[in-house]
Image (cartoon, rainbow, N blue to C red):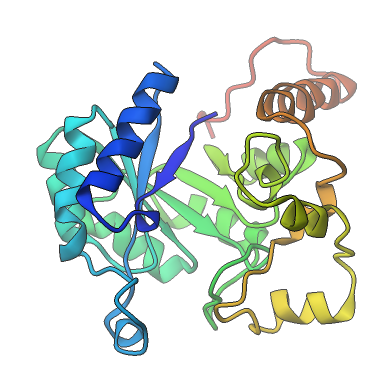
Length: 260
């Protein structure tokens, strides 16, 4: 697993620095930072809590100095952040909702693209497609690595994403019900009890009604109980994926998904 800290949660340089220092004390494993940049037309309608690309540049320096080697950006194009990361020898992944934006990110120099399918949560784009269409078309149209996101919450979804051409997957809702998640117990119960076939919930996800309302993704259907992050990754994803592959007749301990 590769954890990511969301920079948008921190208002000041000191707050952000303290969080990165805490992370470095907690683990020696790699981890990253996400910078969510709001489009200009959205910023005009919001309060000062939203951030522009320029407002993150100090945060980028702080992340680099803290030893972060991979940063992700999302919501709007971020060429200045991307260049700053590359100049520091870091990797830049961009998260987007449409193929048009993924191609644009690649053209701007992004090292990988996370593409969120319609099954996911967050603000919806009218031209957004499903995870299946996104990933299979991305494999055809992009040269950079692809990270699949949107509704993935179990081993079958993980394997399906790899089969469709993804190099990795991004879990959001699926890990919100882990013990380590900072989501409230009320929110975790809401995810665990969600009927993903409920008409009102369905409309919020697929009829572009999410807007800014906090709604979990279709991955909620795979959330059965609160478990540790370690158990989620090692047992719910990796072990079950290995069991599925063995049931299909795969005998090797290694499956190469990069050769096709």
